[in-house]
Image (tube, rainbow, N blue to C red):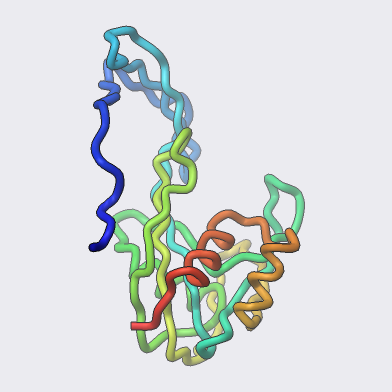
Amino acid sequence: MAAKGPPAGHDFTESTVSTKVAYDGGLLELRRDEVRLPDGKVAWREYVVHPGAVVILAFVDEETILLERQYRYPKRRHFIELPAGKLEKDEPPLATAKRELVEECGFEAREWWRIAVLDPCIGYSTEVIELYGARGLTEVGKDPDEGEHLESFPVKIADALEWVREGAITDTKTTLGLLWWSQWGRFP
């Protein structure tokens, strides 16, 4: 019999008393909400409103995927990552994945499937990342966003997993995507 998740427990829902935008930077919005706790007390919650994102396992063949190398300013270093990108306003996640694969890697894919949904920062952000698989790649040429500088390259999944183990890949969405695939991944 398949597991259906843990049993329901107590309800610890917090209800919003008031909300305000503390900062709006265009991409990200910081909110500060006053909430009523389950015991009736009032507390503050600060969190980032994020539009959501996708991450892509783009298969060159059954053992090889595309990875990217790009500089991430907040951490002041280069990272090895799976292709990914944020959702544009009213853009469905699959459309985002298709757009990002072309923009960042220069490929279209014949076959797409949703692998998993990830909540990467549950303590301070609304961000949801949808993990997609893509195969049957056709090179169409890169179309990067203005100011976006990165390189993509093929790598064996086994090597990428070794890079996770060694600490050469530390990006959370990439680590989770690779480990998820290594444990439960199946081609449709």
